[in-house]
Image 1 (cartoon, rainbow, N blue to C red):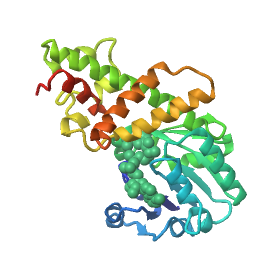
Image 2: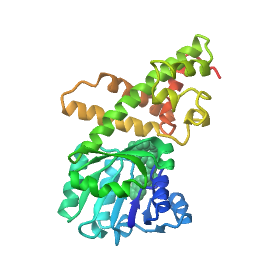
Image 3: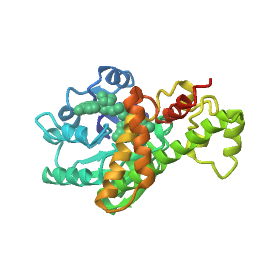
Image 4: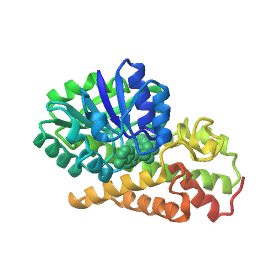
Length: 299
Ligand code: NAD
């Protein structure tokens, strides 16, 4: 199928590459020339704008940082909606707030298009391996129609409910992730300060009740998990500023629902502190630097 793909960052680039591997013809756009080059080498057609990427496409997929970027890419003279054929479905896999997802669905509908929110979990590793989980919001029929396309990039394609509920699932998941990473970082740094070897402590945790994704796959202490961003200088993972954005979305949504989010709000402050210290581009597991710096960095 002909797919317009916009947003070729840490997640978007490997997702688009997997669609090419699955046999689809891609027309891609990103503001970064480097990102475009990688896709050109793999056989994608380079478009000069979101509009050009969407023109003639049977599906359009966006994978952008935040709602403001999605709005900019969809609307305007050079936007997707100006180029896309009527009846085409736009799938947004960015993590954004549920209210914006609903607003974009309404914009698409007014243009004669359908819109599915389909944020992902699984990280950059899942994007490369094609094993992402997609959380899809929209009608059951829309979900059935997007499933074959998303299967080229993921293993678990889950229908969450009406438009916006994919984003609800994503925000709730990332609330847990932000909190568990802070907890694991706190415990690993405490263990170090108290004199236990980090690998031993990590190993115990990962066969005990402290085990979670933040400890057994993405452990923030360097060297505990060789494939984790912590073992390569906190690069190439899920950026702190993106986690900060997601916790902001979660706490805002909690405010609107008049729900408490005690842990989410505290975690948000921790990632905010990291970002203010200039570490916003590092993987979010670098949160352990807050703890290791405070106690005097060891190793
Ligand atoms: P990223 O910052 O690496 O990539 C975003 C890309 O969008 C960049 O290449 C940027 O140039 C491009 N872009 C920005 N504005 C644009 C515009 N107007 N037109 C065209 N391109 C534009 O981000 P990422 O890590 O790939 O994350 C993308 C989304 O997926 C975010 O919403 C994030 O929260 C979510 N997410 C990320 C991860 C992860 O592990 N990185 C995991 C799950 C979900």
